[in-house]
Image (tube, rainbow, N blue to C red):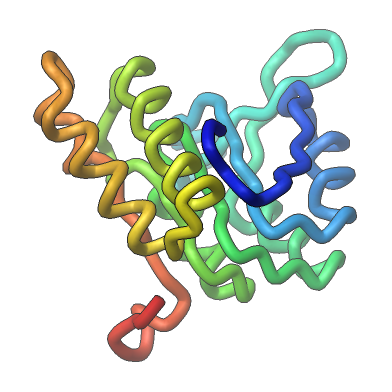
Length: 173
C-alpha cells in the first residue's frame, strides 16, 4: 500500500480451517479469503462451499453454516470480509446474518478471472487503507478501476458488496 498514513498489520497464511480460526480469534477488522468455492451437491444437499486446505494439501469443504459457527464462537464483528472465490455469494448472506458489516464476494454461479481478483483487491485495499475511504467507497473505486482495465472490463460486475444493513434497510457507509 503506497502513500498511506495508516499502519496496516497483516498476516498471510495457508487457508486451513485452523488458520481461519486463528485469524478470527485475533478479532481483525478485515478478513480476506482467497481460494476456491464450489457448488456442492453431495449427500442430497445443495449448498455452496468454500474449499479450505488441510495440512496435507487436500481440500476440505466448509459450508456457510460452519463459517457462521466459527464466527459466532469468537463473537466476531468484522468490518470487512472479502471472499475472493467462486460461489461465495451464499456465504456472504450467512456472514451478514452473523453480524459482519460488509462482505465483498463473487456473484452466485459466476466465475471470475484471477487477474481480475488481483486488480480488484489491490484497488480496494489501496482506497481503504491508503486513501482512508469507507468500505463502500473503496468497493466503488475498485469496480471503476476494473471496468477501465483492458481485457477485464466485464469482470467488474461480478464483484458485489453486501452489507448488514442492506438486509433490512438502505445501507450508509
